[in-house]
Amino acid sequence: MDSAKHSDSAPESKESETTLFDNLTWLSTKDAAVYLRKFRKKDGKPSDGAIRTAIWRGLLKARKWGRRLYIKRVELDRLLELSLI
Image 1 (tube, rainbow, N blue to C red):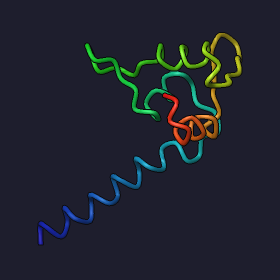
Image 2: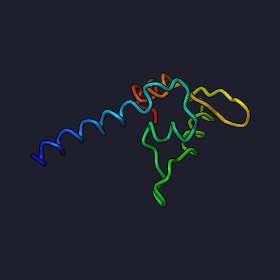
Image 3: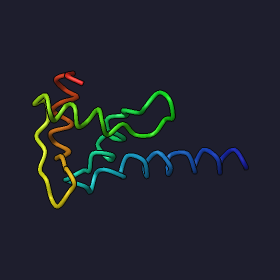
C-alpha cells in the first residue's frame, strides 16, 4: 500500500515541475537559465551570465523592463530546437 502512495506522488511532482513554466510567457534571466538547465559548475546556481552572453551574441532576443531582462519562452524553445546553446 505504501508503494502505491509513492507511485502516485511521483507523477504529481513531475507534473508540478513541467507546469512551472507553462503559464509563463516571459522569463527572467535566472528563470531562463533554470528552464535551459544552465547552472554554474562551482556552486550549482542558475547561470544568468550564460543567458546574458547568448543575448549579447544575438542568439536570444530580450526585452528590458525596469532594470531586468526578460526573454520569451518561445525564443528559448527555438534556441533549444536549433541547438545553439
